[in-house]
Figure 1 (cartoon, rainbow, N blue to C red):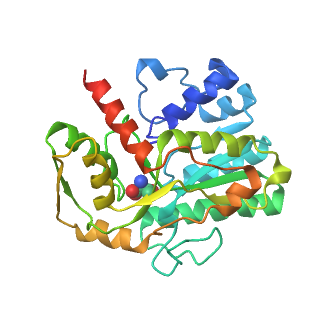
Figure 2: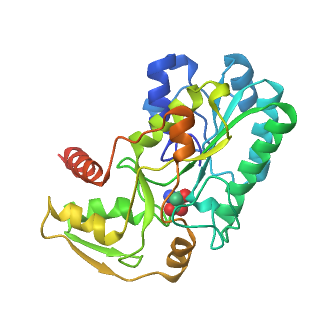
Figure 3: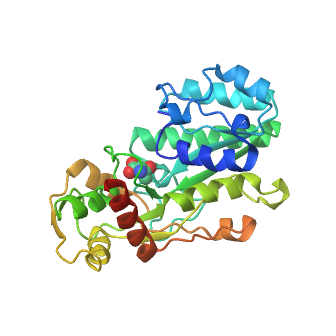
Amino acid sequence: AGGLGQLGVGLAEMLRKQYGTDNVILSDIKKPPPHVYRSGMAMFSILVLMLCLVLAHLYMYLSPIGLHNVLDLALENCLRLFVPSTIGAFGPSSPRDPVPDLCVQRPRTIYGVSKVHGELMGEYLHHKYGLDFRCLRYPGVISVNTTPGGGTTDYAVQIFHDAISTGHHECYLRADTRLPMMHISDCHRATLEFMQAPECQLSLRTYNIAAMSFTPEEVAQEIRKHLPHLKITYSPDSVRQTIADSWPVRFDDSNARRDWGWKPAFGLEELVSDMLHTIRNKRT
Ligand code: AKB
């Protein structure tokens, strides 16, 4: 996965509008669809030839080698580097409601461990060698453009498709499982605003960003305001339920709000009406 994942395509679209089409290059190990195709150049030549200021490194870096290559290239070429993290970087011994930016991080998934590794490597290179490393911890991101995979927060995408197509959603989490969530456009905007913030405003290098927190029951209730017949049944899957129970219920994002002015535009009400509207438009 990489630039063509849930976040990369929309982020590149936004960056291309601001910085020009040819100044933003998306890379991935997958073959891009024609509308996002730009160049098959190798990562090194992309960095050096385009003199990028920002390298949005959006793959999940389950491979530490990939992450280390990117960190080295950013350092050698004095690039501002963005690495995404998530609620998955916390674990059962972290405070959950709310979770602050700085606290115990002992995730029990390899996904979470790789996120903490990325956060710590970037911060180490920042403190030791001055790398302009920036990292955001995203909540579960909700968008229509990617098919939900096996993620713990993915029910919150699938439920909209099910509400419109069959009117029934079978949820793999318990009804009262509260997790932090965010509309994808807030997620893209946060990333851009954070990357554009002057260095002198940043008191941290890794920030939590929040928008809303809801349970499956609450999102179903809100969808029922538009589609009253939505039925939701619960069949918790032990793996994802255990992961969700170890993740934060709420993010404390007060540092992001204070340092670089973070403010979400979408709450639950706006998220639900936008998702239903967008999915319906795509189907017609
Ligand atoms: C997942 O559900 O695994 C991801 C995440 C919160 O990192 N969406």
